[in-house]
Amino acid sequence: MARMNLTLRAGERLFINGAVLRTDRKVTLELLNDVAFLLENHVIQASDATTLLRQIYFAVQIMLMDPASLPNSLPLAEQLLKSSIQSFQSPLIVAGLREIGSLIQRQRYYDALKALRALYVYEQAEMHPSVSAKETTTQRISP
Image (cartoon, rainbow, N blue to C red; front, top):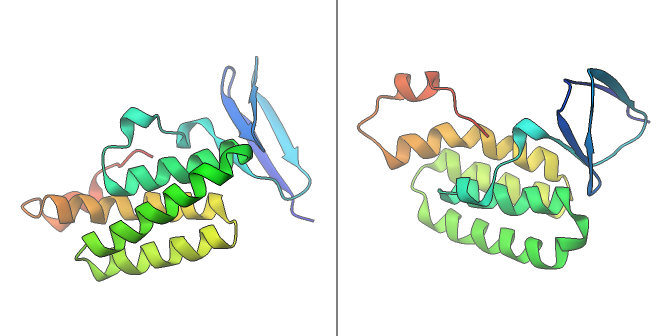
């Protein structure tokens, strides 16, 4: 049995198995079993899905937040992954996308989102090669 403690601030939202919870005060929750959840600060809006990786992120996020949408969001995520693997030049990004595809097939959506966030900096570097690698890796990239 997996146990995890989450501490939320007043007004913060948490998405668990398709349900949205909002706290009215600071609270610590202990999750006593495996559950699909997403913290509010990792949620992006459709308007923020401006790059290939963020579009994949948004599709996977929907699968996690609304399990009933799986019949529509899973094929979308798979198609976006396929086209992204063909679009990127960076072997690191391509390898990461293949691993993300594997995570999605194993229904490890949270892990897929985490892996996608880790690739943002490399996507930025590939999209803007004039920005030095040092500048890119020190930038704070939001989800």
